Length: 70
View 1: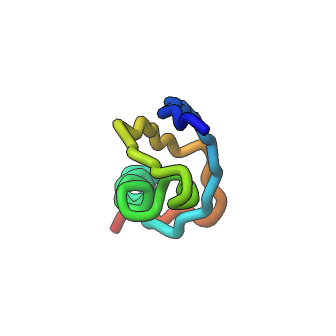
View 2: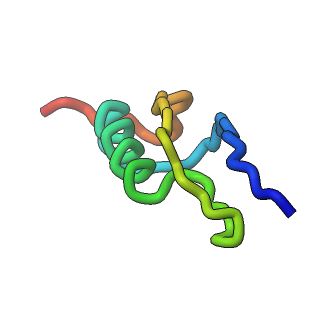
């Protein structure tokens, strides 16, 4: 049976909780996390060959006590 290479483009949105002192730090930690862990894996039987990955990180909410500046 013939085999075909088929491009699949997927955009995911996953909300995660990150403990950080500031929104900027949370954003930085999220970028580190997505660079290390983000993405979708396909079984080897499909011979996946990723051409690129697009991602955006945005702080969408804050819960907790704000620290007072000393």
